[in-house]
Image 1 (tube, one colour):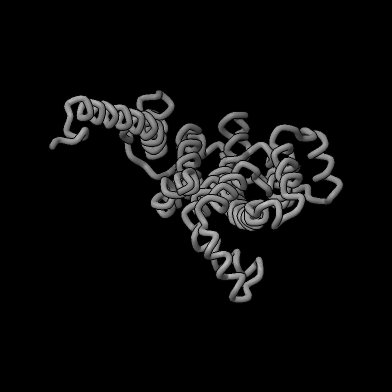
Image 2 (cartoon, rainbow, N blue to C red; image 1 turned 90 degrees about the vertical axis):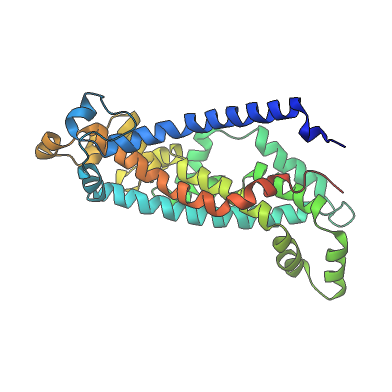
Length: 295
């Protein structure tokens, strides 16, 4: 008895599906390969835009200049600090909030009120000027915490964890923990979090990418360029064309192209995410699907 997986239409669909996904993957990879090729190319072909997907007149001068740029190195470590502290802070807050809101109304009185208050903040907020005044008056300007605290509670990510807690954690395990004398914190750390590792890893990946790529808050909350995170520094160099942050003198401009230095900095900035994603990829699909269907 043949199954639907052996049918001609299913095979055609699978072939077209793989072809489409392969084409999309190539479209995503090609710009990165081009940036990598430009970063390893010599000044003349880079300035003449003769570089495609392979370096022309291979050289590592751009990387040597980039790693010798104190502004770049300082911003790189600022971004690492921001991403690490921001992800830990956000995950701690939204995990505890999701646990509390996952309870039934008779277990947590006022649960619906708190839930709607969280949802309200997704739709309405004070705006940029009140946020800036709060950060300024609380003394967070030019501090890494100015990039973390204002957006520490990611409501959408909290809802993802809340949905998982409510639908995928067996109630019997929680009741067994209570019978054994466990309190809410012990139940959270011993029952909920171990079962929610895929979802927590997925949401953590969202936060890591968000903190690493976010540049706007660094631009408005950091009045000193030496405090910029890496994404903000690259925004000033690549988008605003503020080459003063690159520390290129006359001798450098004779040997290097602005395009190669920019390309090297952009590629280095993508490496941490490219390194972290494979570590969390095995949790990604599972983490998104878990909690979507209640059995």
